[in-house]
Structure formats: structure tokens, C-alpha cells
Picture 1 (cartoon, rainbow, N blue to C red):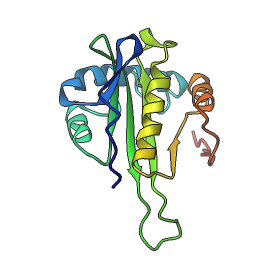
Picture 2: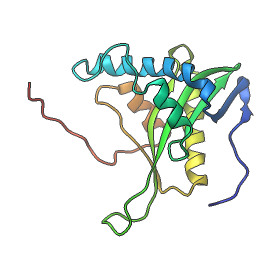
Picture 3: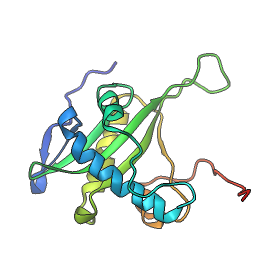
Length: 171
């Protein structure tokens, strides 16, 4: 791989710092995941349960230890105020897809009490720089229909549509 100075664990203005998530961050991450879950529950109560999280504490322990699934946190005044979950997507050799490696952004969340202060932008810029450092071809993510605030944020960051997911409700 490429060798370059690591750009995480660098203090940022306003006492913010982006760094790799650690086991000790799991309670804070779980709290943020409840907020993410509630956004999705309000949009799609037919699919998302209230008060639940996407991952358990045990699953988060595995994820933060997995180099193929990097998780970054934004710390402000020594408190986790946001996170970004990522995952490398590597195509099967010899298949129809080229060897282009994608960094999939599974989740970006900023604590609802800290929104509008640049935390999400800092997390995105960190993820983007990380993807460049790792030689990725692109960043991808999914946004649920109706999550207009997230869509607007990602568009402002420069994301454009890649494909459209559709559904046909049976009941």
C-alpha cells in the first residue's frame, strides 16, 4: 500500500478531532446509532423499529477491530459527537466489474445536539482523504427516500446519483 503520514488523530479547530473508533467509544456510538434508528423509524416505521440500533455492542467490537470496515469518530471536547462507518467493497477477480475498489459509507451520524457546526463535513472530508490514501476509485452510500436533510448534505459534499433502488409494496 501507499505510505504517507497518517492524517487522523490530528486535532482540528474548535477542539474537534477525527480519529479511529476504539472499543471505549462503543457506548457513545450506540447512542448515536439510536438517533440514526429513530430517523429511519420516522421515515419507514414499516421497516425500522423504534429504540433499536443497527449493531449490538458485540458487533461493534468486531467492526472497530476490522481493518476492512473502518469507523471514525469526531470528538469535541473529549466527547464523541459523530461517527462514520465505512466498508471496503472489493469486486471478485475476473468478474464483470473492474478491479476498482469502493469505500462504501455505511453510516454518518452527527449528534442531534451538535448538528450545523461542521462535524458532518469534517467526517466526510476525513473519509474522502482516507479513501484517496487507500487508492479507492469512489465513495458510495445509500440515502432513504424522504431523508431530505441527509440527501441535501451529501449533495453539498459532491455526491451524485449512481443508481436507484426501488421497491413495490405488497401489503
